[in-house]
Image (cartoon, rainbow, N blue to C red):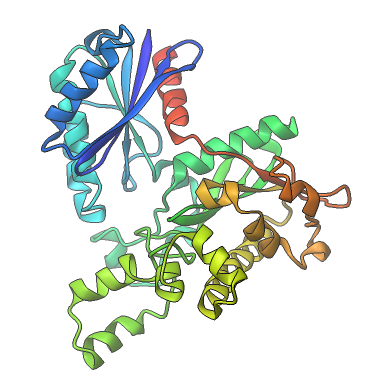
Length: 368
């Protein structure tokens, strides 16, 4: 039997299907340019039939849902009430939750007897203490408008923390970890004994570290300044900060490989972009080392985190006094363990697999 994992976008459906017992990946695919999610599921049904899989007879379907607010601390079985709750959270994730809901509804329509489970990107971070997730703003803004840090990439941070526990052969309850999910979106997480206690993204994915097209944390007064001095609308500012900033704004592209090549050719903007990017990562690393008061491992994951030895080196450079000693040969060879023997902190490069982690959640729920 099988578990189907769905990541529904506004015009696409990414899917993976696993053996329920072994979690062996059976098939995966991406259906793009769909007019609606019901159409996309019909296409997927046909593709799965090539593997003799009847979507109406599988064990379960797990859905990625971007925002679970404060309500959802763990994956939850889908019913009408849960869909209403996810719908109520749309103001917190207007670009993502509607598509996630459409994917859930399409799945329930095409396979009404198959149980569906929602897995929330924000859930892993719901263990943060109030002093970490609250902003220094009026209580009413939190209590009435839910203004607080939620964090994202939670499924990825959780997955690589479990993998690190296996690699280090230590129970996760005994480990303090710092995880860096570095792709076009970038976030860090401080994990204490298996629980997220802080993360760099905030109420939205815009806060925190410099990213591919997002600026990360900046002086909030810049927004008012641009609106007043440049006559920008709030929509224009939002587009600027989310889609026209970060690496793209400084280097002219958000493709790090191209930026690195341009840097080698003497491009000053490319060099500046990489320096800014690595500096903010290194600063976040130092902050979380102080928060955790002792770190067992630093983990790099995500498209850049898994494939850029240069970023590993620039983040870890000069931190030997903090117990972080990079082995440049291991790093250049793309090994999993990139620390040297003198390092008291393990430095690990672990590929993330959010779809597999969703399948693990669903497998556990089915067993329960």
